[in-house]
Length: 88
Image (cartoon, rainbow, N blue to C red; front, side):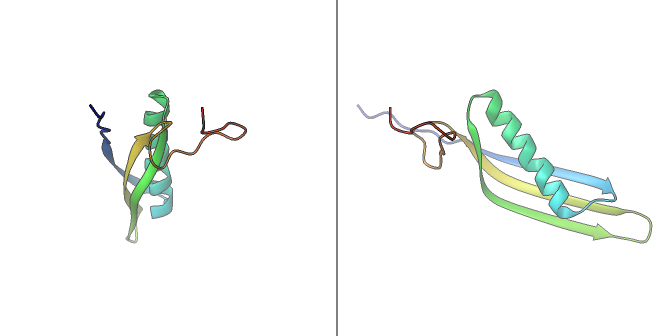
């Protein structure tokens, strides 16, 4: 019997206010994904990301959405850490 691989896709949304940019919000969302996946011993792979800025005279706001998944050894998209081999 073949084992089926199940990929879990995550959507991380971040909204920031103050002196921020959409790229800063996107970076914060990616860091959240990386931290979550690292807690599972995996890597976060970004599948899609958008960043938006909303400027007005008083304050700037930015938001971002990042879609990605946690991958481990043997999963497509996994990159072995430097100095290691992906082949057992």
